Amino acid sequence: MRKPLITFLILFGAVTMNACKKEEQKAPGNPVINIKTEFSSAYFGDSLQFTVGVSDEARIPLSTLKAHLYYSDELVSETVIRTKTEGDYTGKIYIPYYAHVPNGTATLKLVLQNINFTTREETLELPVERPDYPYLTLIAEDTEYRMERTGLYTYAAATTFPAKVNGYIKTPAYGDNGNELTFGWEEHTIKEGSINNIPFSNAFSGDYTIMFNTLNYEASPFIIAYAINQTVMDRVDDNMYRVDLALNREEQVVIDGFDDLDAWWFDPDFFTRDASGNLLFQAKSGNYRISADFNHEYFIVEALTGTNLSTLQADGSGAVWVIGEGIGKPSIATNAVGWTTEKALCMAPVADKIYQITVVAGTTVSASDINFKFFHQKGWGGEFTNAALSTTSDLIFVGDGSNGRDPGNLGITEGQTLETGATYVFTLDLTGGNDNGVLTVEKK
Picture: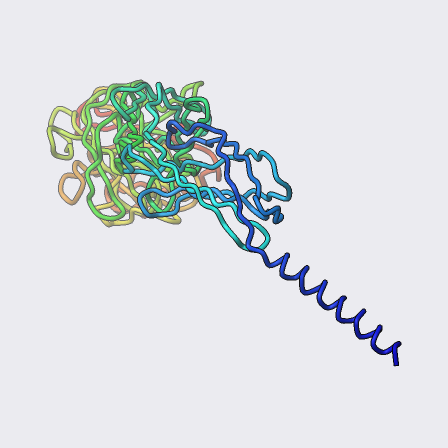
């Protein structure tokens, strides 16, 4: 009978000891925070370092130390440090940089927790202000531009820019705890922390200023425009823009605002490129209308007298126009002129009373069949008949009404064709008078 009693006492003692241990483990404990960093102030964009001593008066093992940062009542940043043992722990908390947030006082809350979920909190006030950077850097695709401080939170880069500058903005690190910050393009607005290119754009390339404000994120310029020689083109419709300009022969022509300009076709009668790739005007100095045809991706050039399209004058000055079949720019396949007068092509005035049009057989002119003629205007009216036009060309003949072409209409001589891919220059010389035009056709 003694053995069961001893067994009972042993079991009772074990249960009692386990219960005591459980009660001991369930003791809430008393976490203690000892802040060892003086938080005097910080800047937006800082990574603020701090050191905190942690312990528990009841020797309950610790779990975590959390740092929470609040702007007003909004939690904007936090960091968590695992605290396995008592001692000093060092961490960092980021001071977020946002638009429109004024200088003020943030709240830093430190929360220490032990394994029994008992916590201790310490709350501190942290004065925070916006950095006053000495400069910013605009990082474009292949160039960096320094943006100088022009006032509180305002910065500007003033230099020679292309019409479109795609880039993001970077700050230097500011103060002892500062970071380099970036500002880029997100959902059609400027956002901190992004390096997506901001689509700065001006009406023209040249000297202008790019600006940015680090408080409200206002920036400029954002001008979506097409321009030639710094003159903005007027919208005719969704697919046509135009501008009237005075142009000089061999003058550089600067075209701005077009994303894919390399894909556009340039009329060789009016444009050429120099060794540096600059676009040069090739026709006689004067007034011209340049129209950007987005449907066909080429620039239509037409001579002007004042603000009106030029017509042929009695003295041979002005302009000569081409209307008819088998010719078209930038190609006959996509934009043949035909007898649609609105599509009439203006011949380039290359000298006094001398006009030319350059074509490529099989591309801008038919290699086997043409039927176009020269007109005094862009439309019906005065025209060159065989009575006023002659040629000594073996390839091209002038119609007389009985040779297969109407009077003045051009054709390809029977048995002849133009060489596909070859360039031909049609030159109309009116120095002998409008009634004595001479056509030459030169293969280049």
